[in-house]
Length: 168
Image 1 (cartoon, rainbow, N blue to C red):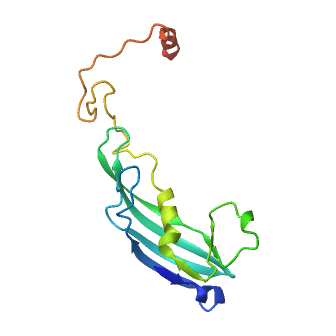
Image 2: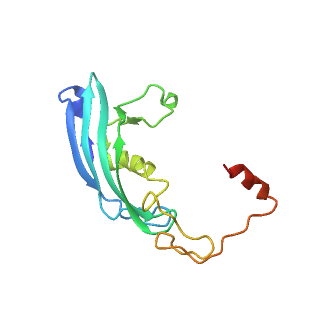
Image 3: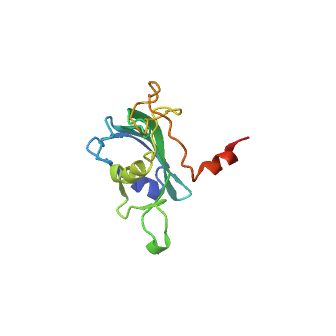
């Protein structure tokens, strides 16, 4: 979706509303296609005192696997995109962060603009529930469904003295 920002930069408007859906169903992330529904992006682009800024909320539904038990899990969250938009920079090397977007033709491709922020906001750790017990490291039994029959390992005799520190 291409958005014309000329009215904001010229001062004839102070707000442009944004509402669209972005299809990321073909994005392959860590061997999985995690976006099974479109990302809903809504918000506005505002101009205040000659400064144009985005205030966008991206409603993301991310499907991945629990890092402890490997059960397929859906995580819903909102990624916020708050960036300053400029026509040009005097010294582009002086800007060290990604909080500024340059649009020399005053047209903003919203999909390109939002893509990196959405991907960077993806969760690094996913749990099916906060108290997920995971899998038994010996037999692979899902400990959320019940305990396994594995014997508890004996402590390495070289480290047995450390167990004394854990008492009390």
